[in-house]
Structures are given as structure tokens and as C-alpha cells.
Image (cartoon, rainbow, N blue to C red; front, side, top):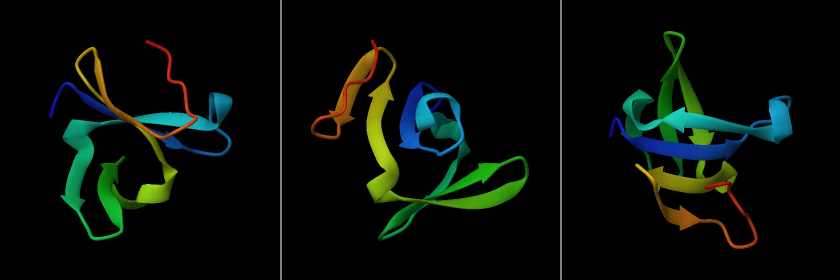
Length: 69
């Protein structure tokens, strides 16, 4: 999971997007990812996910969203 990156909507971040490293994912719940950030558990609902990359490959991208290569 070290090479996995998940791009999410995060209001207030530059461009309103944020990249989550796969190594910070603690659990995959039925409706959300549980992520550890700065020692705290954060819930990321799936509808906020825009793209999933593994290494240089985009393995999933929300329809209509264009991530930069």
C-alpha cells in the first residue's frame, strides 16, 4: 500500500483536493475509509474519493474527474 494514493475532496485544501497515502488507511468500512492522520482516526466517506492510483497507474477515477498524471 505504500505506493497507493487516494485523491479525495477536501474543502480548504489547494484545489479542494487532498491525497491520502495508502499506508495511512487503517480499515475499509462499508461506507467509508478509516484513515489515521496526525495520530487521529478520520472517516473518509466513499463519495469524497475522486481517484485511486497505484504507483504511476490510475486504477479508478470518478466519472468526470481528471487527475493530473
